[in-house]
Length: 201
Ligand SMILES: Cc1cc2nc3c(=O)[nH]c(=O)nc-3n(C[C@H](O)[C@H](O)[C@H](O)COP(=O)(O)O)c2cc1C
Image 1 (spheres, helix red, strand yellow):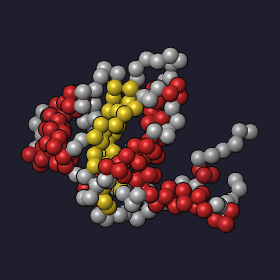
Image 2: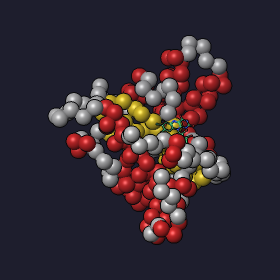
Image 3: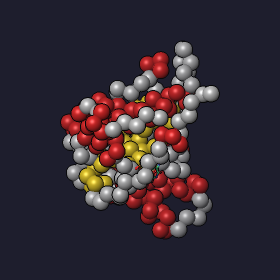
Image 4: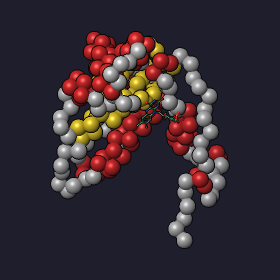
């Protein structure tokens, strides 16, 4: 595969590459105040709206969890834990509750499988959500805002579904967290294209 040297890149490409390589997942406990301002959050969501979307279904949405609702989310996490484990320890309960309070800006990403015409399968809808999320993470990176994704067994527990008023066609995919990075992990090595690209022979 052709090697691309830095000199071949335009400034725009260089900047894009810089943001892409600088982005990394930051654990929510390392995302602290200040979170994004309303204006910055608006830019992040505008980035999301530029995602490809087969059939223009807008099959995903994000629900912000303001500080005033974190305790309710914590209780929903605890309920979900108790549902899958009949006898959790006090430490497990405290950890489940505390998860709701970590990043200054927290939202849940939701996908819809509502039947459509033409039918666009769930896989394609999830790709659209993934693209939207990557746009958001990259936009955050350009604003010097750290980001992290979290998921886990509680995503579609009844307590979470109830709290966020999911419809029967909706599913929670993950949480997206934003904030100021308190400490950053070193960059991880990236897979070379040769490890995931081949040419049909
Ligand atoms: C849908 C999705 C769910 C994720 N859930 C978690 C999670 O529950 N906990 C976690 O530590 N990281 C989670 N991640 C983040 C990945 O662990 C992270 O992207 C991966 O380690 C690669 O690191 P990088 O993003 O810095 O390249 C999730 C990522 C995606 C795309």
